Image 1 (tube, rainbow over the protein chains, first blue to last red):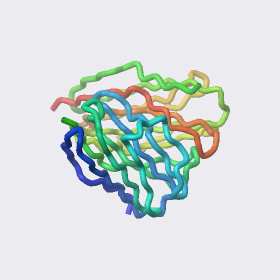
Image 2 (tube, rainbow over the protein chains, first blue to last red):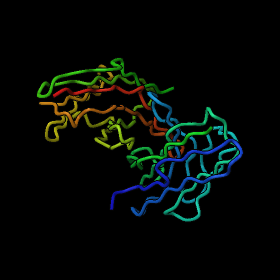
Image 3 (cartoon, rainbow over the protein chains, first blue to last red):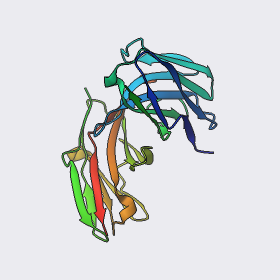
Image 4 (cartoon, helix red, strand yellow):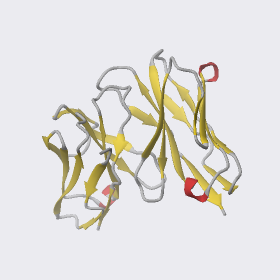
Length: 114
Length: 116
């Protein structure tokens, strides 16, 4: 199984809503990542979890809150988002966090904030 | 600081044409890793290849081939006999060997359109 799954595929939310994005992998990978991608731009790293601990936070606003309940799951909790947060949110995983391992990406969640 | 330049932004070819996507990188490290990813309209980034800085052998995988030249800091990708299914955005990426906190730096991507 070389798949990273993400739910939901699409999400529309208001600025006062609270929602969560979910990501799952069953490859035994110990590093998981959240990226944000705006249209016609490359992905931008948001967070990295290494062995279930947050190792990188790229100065992401606190309205985005990541969580790694176990080695297979990664969540991104959303609260009080702004319209400019509308984007494709991609989850990825790699065998471990070291540089030589390729990252495998999920299909993403297309988020629209109204 | 590391940098990846994909100077071509959009390329349009007719099916069965060969097409080369250029990637030029900058890094001060002697050990680093280069990657190509494909992003079809569905959104998922699909891993295509990884190359480390000590391995300059060219690679061929079916219709895909990669030319890594350290002398020019380039890692170019050629699709032979292109097909409509090759239409996607292609990203070149670089990761330096600085341990667990090294980040994947992407180029801006090249949008390839293959017309029937």
